[in-house]
Length: 469
Ligand SMILES: Cc1cc2nc3c(=O)[nH]c(=O)nc-3n(C[C@H](O)[C@H](O)[C@H](O)COP(=O)(O)OP(=O)(O)OC[C@H]3O[C@@H](n4cnc5c(N)ncnc54)[C@H](O)[C@@H]3O)c2cc1C
Image 1 (tube, rainbow, N blue to C red):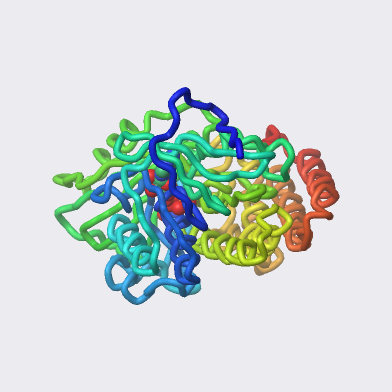
Image 2: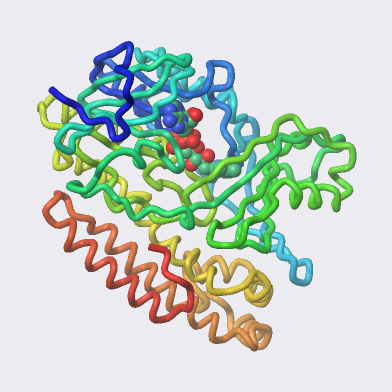
């Protein structure tokens, strides 16, 4: 059989390996996918571009909100013991620069801040324990495709050309996947409506402060000019993950300089030492409409499975990795790796966290129609819990009469924005309901997309923000 590499090299590859499943990328999504498939007895290789000593380290805020529900395919107790540094996060504090106000939201369950390197290392250890072969220093550069079906990947291993062939390739390469640049998805449903402007560029440092912070039970956010936010996430009272990001729709921000200025401006950071620095991008968009193609499934950041407002993607990556592998196992046993055979994976994602992320995305787009000063004023003028309710819960009607009157007075000048926000909330609800009705098989897909686009048209009729898709 003649495979087509999308950027065929003159030199033939030196080594060819055949397995059941190739997982590209050893982050959260890739390791959960690999462990799931290897547990089922399949021959799985995980290809990771980093060396063994660097693998596991990822630029991340390392925070997981509320009750953590990772798939039970690895030793979760071991993961917890080794890497859950601070399991006592009980609230989020949003520092609003206007009038130095803070908005505080209590969590339902306790959140966690991870030691991310150890977390990543344990996930890789667990994938190996399940039976996965992990190949480090392996950079995947291209896909092999035959008649639209992905048959494997090409790359280098310790600098030498390498080829892997498999029934299914799972793309877990994170944000801005090279595999998706190389593959030809013309005849598949795979979502190719992906642009840089749908991502956030972010940078973080792990710092040690001399005196314990008082808010080691909270994750703290502060808005930045470029529609992003600064965060302070405590791994302990003296070890903090601090970082910031900006939405790529906005003009680029000097992330390192802005973070330095912020740290210098606050006495609690006097004498702090930096233990690690890292930057990366993260998708802040709705989940891919379809993340499958013949022989190929994308998971985690590579499929946009991230909360577009907070940038939280660890839990979605773990679940998506597990669901993708479950579907791949079925497909291989039925000798059918078409996108129809993988469809249940799309359905599972969209009808669980996908519908929530798509709805949250509307607030994100709405916010791009305003500058941060206006948004901060709106936040300052509405009582904290009610603002949180207006977006996610019971809404302004939940307020008492005096509070309503006070809010009406303090929000004077922003009534049109608040009205818009109310309409956005209704459309977000409609969108979420539509995602919950994602087609159970491939046949209803285009009709579903058309109806979704019509909800987006209604949204753009009420708000000034530019179209994101
Ligand atoms: C700065 C920042 C802060 C964040 N904060 C949070 C947070 O507080 N909480 C939260 O839940 N989420 C957060 N996220 C998001 C979260 O980190 C991601 O959603 C999550 O890591 C996605 O996991 P993944 O496995 O899909 O991708 P990744 O974790 O990015 O893993 C991808 C892996 O693929 C490898 N790879 C890439 N290309 C290739 C290639 N060509 N060949 C071989 N290997 C390759 C990479 O080396 C990497 O190991 C943050 C993201 C950023 C950037």
